[in-house]
View 1: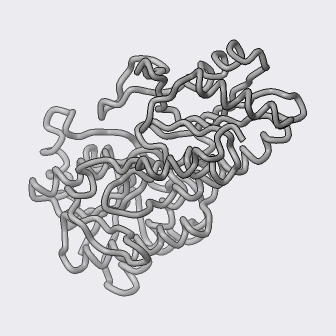
View 2: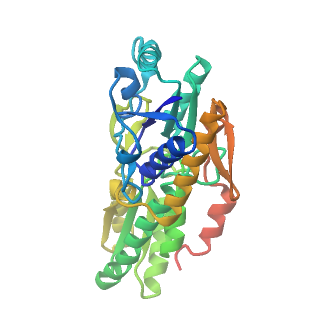
Length: 342
């Protein structure tokens, strides 16, 4: 078979590990041929490819990002986009696609499957918000990066007797904020799943100062105060209709400084969380996903996504994986609340 591989959406530690596993097993075990599509769905849409063989995947296991490039191109928002993809795949002799991405990339994959394109999906998102899989690769790396930042910020906060607000990624799901906040000993954690009361947060901050230690507040970029107004960077939408978020950390710091009379500063980790070398956990998970994805392609089990359930890699329908976001349940947030303000 001649198989295309693409990576879509935001870059993520572990993408190269998936590519490597797919190509290495696909060639050495099954004798398949591979074509790399550049920049997500833009590759098959415009017929932009690169060579993808064993030589091209050597040494990429520890590298962050993706050797194939990425984009947020949505072929369903482009006139004739789907027809162009099908035509280009036929011209290039592509029998199947391995699409590595998150909700948007795999949503396109699911629609293309319904239209007769042979696709197998691999779940990727540092937010860990894809349904049908316990974990996605990239999440562990992002949490560790955020945790290390929080560890370092504790000493600065205490040296200057100030509040530090750490804004982390998480548009609609607060998994990074929850895990990094718990691991880093944050005194308040704010998630998109639950609106927060600024006065209550200020109370936690003041209580922390009473212990002679300074507070660390971890807030996901999509968290909202009780008035329900999301803090937006601007009103522009991407190709999948997502608003660009940002600014909640700075807004919250200003509110806390005004309400407590103590200096407050903001640290926005931003894209640092998704860059650089993946952790061992993410390398192993991404590699296993790649190995099982090429098995699915070889067996002709299209329209599926590989997923982690427990310790096993299974296959689930793409539509199931993208049906709804996996958000933080109330009971998980309640576990963390015992540490707030202490």
